[in-house]
Length: 501
Image: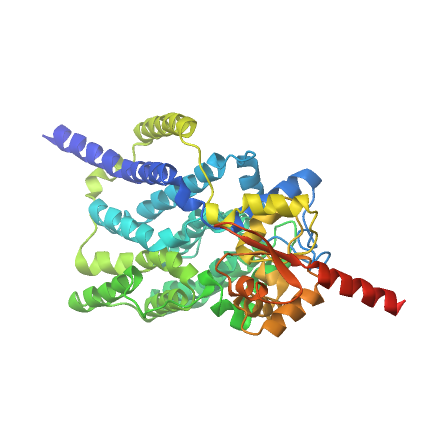
């Protein structure tokens, strides 16, 4: 009888231990099969170009080399490691590598998520929560550095929450994760910012005699984490550079991923948030003050910038997991008699190897038969071909075209690096492309000595240039329209130069 019970516990333990691996593999294969949804943001293109530049020069960029408007001005890459990884994975015209790399990161994120929730919530509910988190995050899943940093983010914050749940200090083994995160993406400042609030949860519940000592341990860990985040090629400038994006003021409300959530139309995020509030009230969930502050902070972040919705989706369940398990009984507490049987590393390792081999075989077969194509609307191949044939040097273009132009070795007017160009410059760019003031548009074109424009066919600026003396339309297709200075403009400029001499 005891043997059968033991075998049952072992089987259940092995099955439960393999759930994160299987779920992660399943998510990886899903995003691989739907790889084009990761190739929708033109920032991916210039990110790879930066990585290629680093590999070619064996150095880190410290000034801008990709634009003609900010050429030579100070600029550092807070995502250099991700950019190098994407550049290594990328083959000329072949997007399979970046898709595979991004899909692996998303699959790893789900596997870590399920593993962190396993002590508190049963497998069926954790899988449901993972599916919900993915649905909330899909709109921001691109082949970009933040996706590669997502599993590191979750592992680091999950480690902090696990320490808080145990009423102890974080493991020092989390510090290498902070260093890795700081080299992958500038979002590592979030991890530094949450050390204090999560540490407060740990200190809040311990005996008064232990509070000071535990608070000091968390404080020491926070200082060590700051030091670990500076272990990058840029040192402490990585921290300064990562914070620079937050100083863009009004501009943040104009860039899609930095916009606040729009509740003018009903969204899945709105439904999720209302559902969470309703369930919490119905089941009378009680949280400590620090957890309430953490949850409200995550909600505030998601409401303020839509790019933070994935942080809310994956981190909020970690904040709520222990209270839910204690008050709703969603976890499974193992009998102490069989505690030693819960870990079966040999079987788990064999299963992991089988999953890796199966996943890699499937990947090779699928990639061989399915070429991945980047979103066509941000890659105006024919228009850029024409500009290069005309040897256009100073092209005023829309920001989404900037990434592709950088990949074609053209110096650009603007691309996705808003922190480089600055708030007022990008605001002037938006006003120009919207043609709110045609005089302002023309002044901008003259100020930067623009000799051609590359705009979206529906751009108000393009329509305005159709009717402005001194400019003429040279080319138009379904992706882009090109305007160049007319011969009349060039003649008047020549006369002006001769008269000045």
